[in-house]
Length: 509
Image 1 (tube, rainbow, N blue to C red):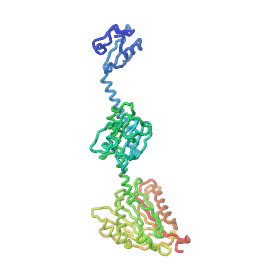
Image 2 (cartoon, rainbow, N blue to C red):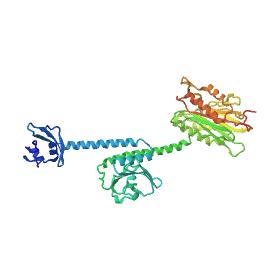
Image 3 (cartoon, rainbow, N blue to C red):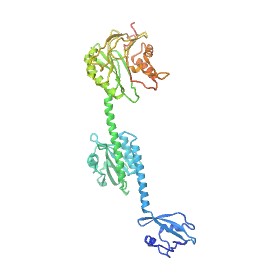
Image 4 (tube, rainbow, N blue to C red):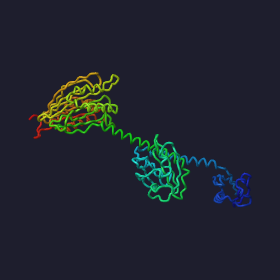
């Protein structure tokens, strides 16, 4: 109990044990309590808080009628410690949540390393170095100082130069974080602007079964070392390692996919042996690059011969997407191997059918083969179909004719039969090969009407005398416009055109 002048009037036994310096008749000596008492003349409201040794107390005032104040002391040390621990854990959780969100925003390896370095310098240390596994005897690294931008480097150094770095990057067996004597740090470790280093920690970055690298945290001289953050630093490193490992795996898979995809993509067509070729391809799904439709143009025999013959293949595999694309690759490879037999379409189709036929397999393919060679001023074609829509010939006068051939699907029956027709193209005339994705494309004003054969014939009737590329683009554009934003099957087409004569004339004359 303290009077209005700040003199202690009474101290109970518990208060005497807690505040042994407080004696009745003497001024209140506990500084934080005395300050609260002096600054609160009159009625006192609300508690104050202060330290007594290693303990934290809350003092609750109870004013008396004669100007005295009774201060009741409550030990809140455990409560405050728990609240402090909760705030620290909340900050850690928030930091790690932000870390996870930032690191998963990109599957780019370099960007993941940049993000890890920036987050580390923002929350954990004055500077950070993120080191990735060796690549061609170089260490990819990202340096960052607090408040600065990340800097990439490709280091021609030995990981053994920095104690603990080689072990951290081995991945197995796992090693703990390691404190390093700053005097043992090599010169290459210090980022620009970081001169005096007071503390260094090397932390492994665990990946998905393989090491993702290491994180090096650096603190300036005179700064309290980040021992309190060692636990969160380890959790942070685990998230960084997982993100970098996922980015590495994605990059590797993307590289493999790109390599495999390169052979599945439709080729760029050009003039072969004096014959014009042009193609267009549109996968059924916008995010797919390949599907079940395909085409190729091969040179048959000696490319330097006076008359160069070519073999055009256009096909449609049952199905869509990657599954169909895999079978497409197999078919294209097989046909390429059968090029020495290009003079005999029936034999090529029979051998391909033998390679694909399987009683338990429901996949099949339709094909059209066209051998082309210059003949006089025009082009002579040998055309064979295997269950595929017959090619269309656009004559010089605008007439559109279907080539009268048919044949069996490939891969369905033990034996296949097909017919071959010979077609002569005069200068400026074109033979169009196409898949049913063109004619069966649904759209139009009602949204569910097929483009069909009649509309294709009408579109081609306006293409007389067009170069191959212009004709292919015109047909593809008309079909795409018809579909609009609707769904469609894979679309593929190839135009084979006899160039105009030297005088630029088309037709026979």
